Image (cartoon, rainbow, N blue to C red; front, side, top):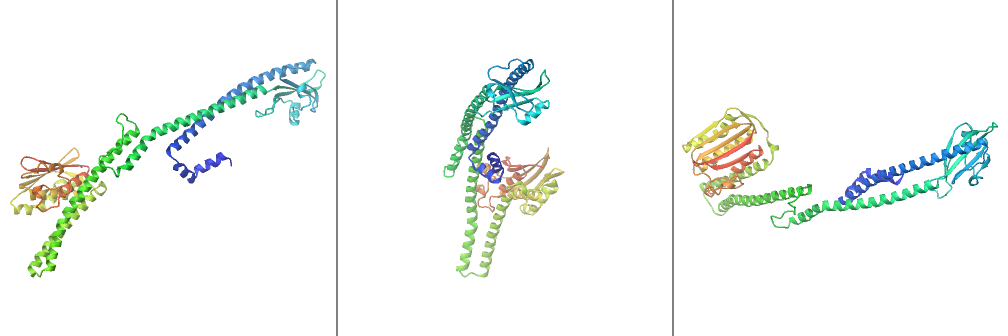
Length: 466
């Protein structure tokens, strides 16, 4: 197997591919450019060499045909044989014995036995003696043909011309083409290397900067030029956007952990205090019962908080949604009706204004979202609560409005953040996850949630594609 075939087999093998992919990208690009240029230069070199060789051979064959015609006429006329400079001739009998020859080939047999047989049978033989790589100046191209003399004898006339000038020209051409191809390949490889380095330098800068981002302060971004619009620049902008999102996500995670620890610390502290008192001081049965009921309340609060967090986590993607057609008035009624008893105890009324028809949503998530909004409206406002639902051009709009003081102005921008609670509601029951859950339900349906003050109270609106 030749080295080229072994290299090709190794490259096709899994090990060869692994070795290739382990090479640096710049080196792979340079090797690819070098391989491509080698093919191009090899093809161009072969084409130029073939064209020049063909032209030289045509000229040599034309000169040989002219010389052979002259030699044949001289043999038939019985004239003295000769020829131009660089020529040679032989006259053979049908057995291959030399009858007459020029000084250059007077003792050298130009035709082989098969050649003599072919010529005797009437064929014309063209043959080269000596190769291109040979430095022998007496390389020849010959033409042999039988000639029937006037005395009815048959001889073989062999005319030959030296190929030295033709071979020397081809060797010089090969040398020049080789030098030119080598220099061109080196230049192309260098240009390919510099181009690859220039193209990948921004990537290396991004890598070095990204490696230091973990220990850097917030707000650090990759150095991306603003006056370009190529692929690497767009990659840099995309990475910077990703870093901004990661930074925002990290900030929200830190706030979430801080708020969650605060929300969990209060019920756990109350539980610990109640249990310590119950364990260390003798207490009558009625007080122990009250303590257990207090503990049960705090445990339920922890369970509600945990369930809310799990629901928010589950709503992180749309893969948990199961959309199906559901009657809109029935959906709204099933979410609002469980709150009518609580509203009646406070002499308040729940109004439903739902457009007839079906919507394609996940009722299992929409229903508790509406229930959360109604519960918030009953706990944090006064007067009646109205739930309206309309559809327009494939979009469902759900709005829950109340009559009360509305949201504090500084609370509106963060109303849907986890554990966000207005100061006035800090002492009231709740975890601050209700509106966050509502926003997550809307987002999981590719929709949005919006909170505002109407002048007569607060309004929370969900816009959901259906």
